[in-house]
Image (cartoon, rainbow, N blue to C red):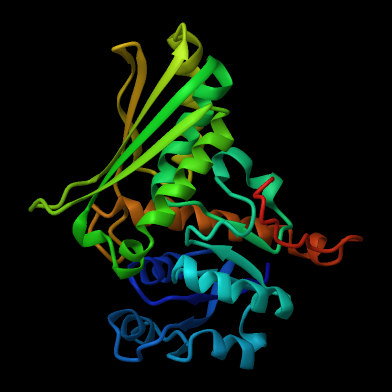
Amino acid sequence: MKKLKVAILGSGNIGTDLLIKIMRSEYLECGAFVGRNLSSPGLAKAQSLGVPVSSESMGFIERNPHCCDIVFDATSAKYHHEHAPVLERLGKIAIDLTPAKIGPMCVPAVNMHECLGYMNVNMVTCGGQASIPIAYAIGQTQKNVDYIEVVSSIASKSAGPATRINLDEYIHTTELGVQKFSGAKRTKAILNLNPAVPCINMQTTVMAKVDKPDLAALRPALDRIVGTIQQYVPDYKIIVGPVVENGRIVVMVRVKGLGDYLPAYAGNLDIINCAAIGMAEEYAKNWEKLATGKNGFKPASREGTA
C-alpha cells in the first residue's frame, strides 16, 4: 500500500527519535521534519537521513500543506494550543505528543479504535503511557478504586527542554489520564528526573488503594495488556508485583528503549513515540475508509471523551 505522509514538528529528543522510528514504518513516510533552529542536532540528523527539513516551524506546513496528511506535534503544550486550530483548518490529523490534552487521550493498548477518526488525539505523557494500562487493568478488576498514585523515574539526560518546561502540564495530564481510564476517585502523579551515572532505565510504579485487593483477577488482566504493549514496545516489563503492600496494590514496570536516538535507558521516548506511531499506522491502514466516510473525520474534543 502507498505510505501515508507525515510531518514532525519539534526537533528535540522526542521528535528525532520519532523520525528514526518512522523511517522503519511500512505505512508511514516523513515528508518534513520541522524545527526552529537549522543547526540543531535533530535537524542535522534528519538532513543526514535525506529527510526534507525546515527551521520555519508551523509556517512551513502552512505554506506546504501537501507535505503531509498527519502531523506529529513534539513541541510543547503551549505551542500545541497554537498549532491545533491551524492544523484543523488545514485538514491535517494532529497526533499530539505534548500534554496539551486538546483531543481525546489515546493509549493504544486501551482505546486505539475509539480514538480513530478524530482530527486531534493526545498521547498523554510518557508516564501516562507506561502507567495507564496498569491503572486500567486495576480499574477493570478491582472494586471501589479509591486512590492511585503513579511515580515515574527517568534519566535526566533523556528529558529535553520541552519536557522540563511542561512539568506542571505533565503532572496534571497524567493524573487526569489515570483517573479517566481507571475510574479512581483520586489520583496523583510524580516524575523524578534522576541524574545518576550511569543513566537509569525508565521505571514507573503504580500504587492503588482498593477495597479487598483481588490479585487473582488482576494478574491475567495485566498479562493481557502487557502483551499488547509489547507488540509496539518490546521491552516493557513488569518487574515488581502485583503485590499487596501496606494495604495497597503495587505494580512496577521497567521500560527500555531500542536505542534509536538516545541509548536504551531512554525508554520514556519509546513508550510515547511507539504509541504515537501505532496510532498513526492505524490511521494509515484505515485512511481510505476514514477519508471518504459519510461523516468525515471528527473534530478535536477538548473534553477528551474518547
